[in-house]
Length: 130
Image (spheres, rainbow, N blue to C red):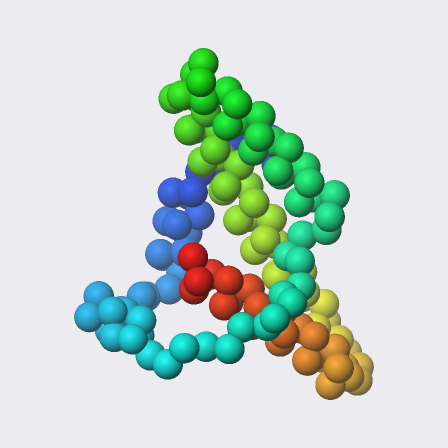
């Protein structure tokens, strides 16, 4: 785990420089598109132990709000940024694994690709539902 404090603005800044979102009017028009199908049982994005650890840390931060609200908000931002960074790493690792197989001309089963696509779709739909 990285000991440097990361904030959501660090992640947002990196994302903004990596991609052009287009004019606001285009983004607003996209919101009016047809509803999307969402998996009935989406796969968990984190291992049970990881998710439990994040929830435990969140609970401690939330409890600390009473005595030190400013510190709690800073810690909440840092934890959210850490979770986002970990999530990005999970998907980057998955992509790296698939690309490694492609480079070696290994046969990747359609089922492996289907599962990867399913995870991406599930995550994508969750992001848009927020």
